Amino acid sequence: MEVNEFETYDIYYDPEGDFLEITLGSPPEKSYADEIEPGVFISRDENTDKAFAIGILSFKKRCYILNEILKRLNIDFPLNISCSE
View 1 (cartoon, rainbow, N blue to C red):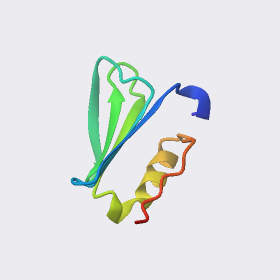
View 2 (view 1 turned 30 degrees about the vertical axis):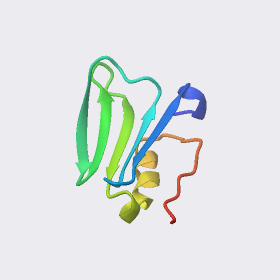
View 3 (view 1 turned 30 degrees about the horizontal axis):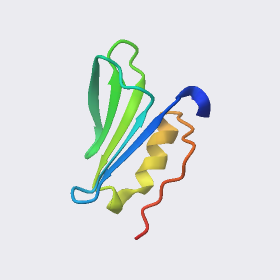
């Protein structure tokens, strides 16, 4: 995916639950989510199967996984997210 493919990006982090969610563009009307590995969720458009959101539980313990997931989905995300305290 090209960086400019999405007009908006939403980043939500819940520090109490240590949950990060990144939404790429506007969510579709119908979607579904897959847990691709324990605690890592990919939400997809039901019609196109295109990924539009990534959710990661226990993000601080495994923030490295975000770059792996973005690479696996071929998404060139325009921001660098770190989890240093």
